[in-house]
Length: 176
Image 1 (cartoon, rainbow, N blue to C red):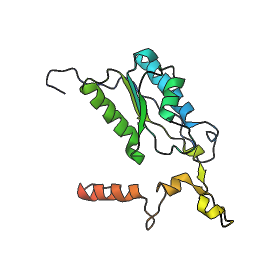
Image 2 (cartoon, one colour):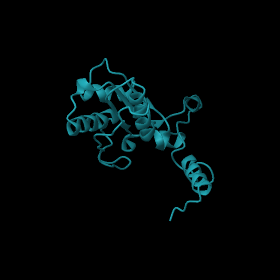
Image 3 (tube, rainbow, N blue to C red):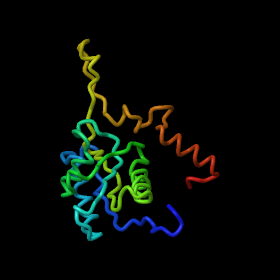
Image 4 (tube, rainbow, N blue to C red):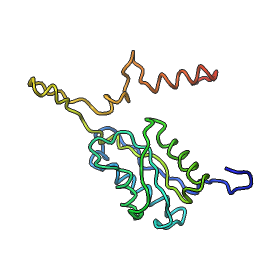
């Protein structure tokens, strides 16, 4: 942003309920959760869906969600099809990265009102069946989140645990 330009501000925030694997939200598509949140932030901010110029959501576990779940959520919230809606993937940092990308989009003048955040439904994470095993008669289903290293995979640490640990050490921080 140039000195003297208007600042980029967050005018509304909301989140969905937190569920558990195979729990009460296990039948709710992630785009429905996103739609609910988008409607709520627009209502709180007193912004009409037609005023939105871009939608950016962090969304990592897209298997089984259909094409562009962010678009599905935005259209479900009444935002016109003509408004760009897309997702970024940075695992735990996706929602925050979406907010940063929204601020950049506004700061450089590409957008004026951006809905940004993140959406996942860990209660409804799909299972994968590796097709190569099907030809041999075996059919072990593996949770999608495990294959994407969201669960501990290396010596009991997930990739994120390792990155967080390195960050704490590098910056002389304590987790306590």
